[in-house]
Length: 93
Figure 1 (cartoon, rainbow, N blue to C red):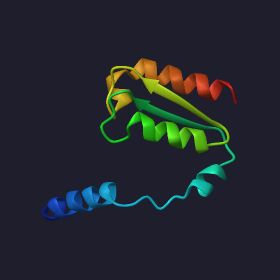
Figure 2: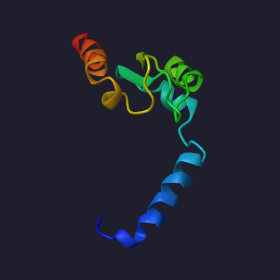
Figure 3: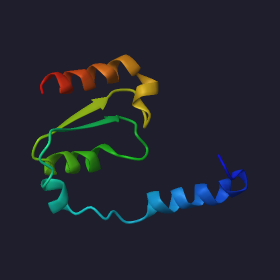
């Protein structure tokens, strides 16, 4: 980090960003025309399944993969499982 003395300020800005309102409208999400994969862990503490299902249902070409037994960092939790889900999604294209 180029300015380590600002680490606490950086973290506070991240917390504010995460806790703040979402500025993407449902209509903007519906307008996404490309195939989109939502991938998450079933124990994700930041993106809960009901909210991700809502997002998935708005995507015209969306798919969703829920990685069992994982939290937010699915690639670190079950790397091969996650990679397979992504490869399966991409192979359809």
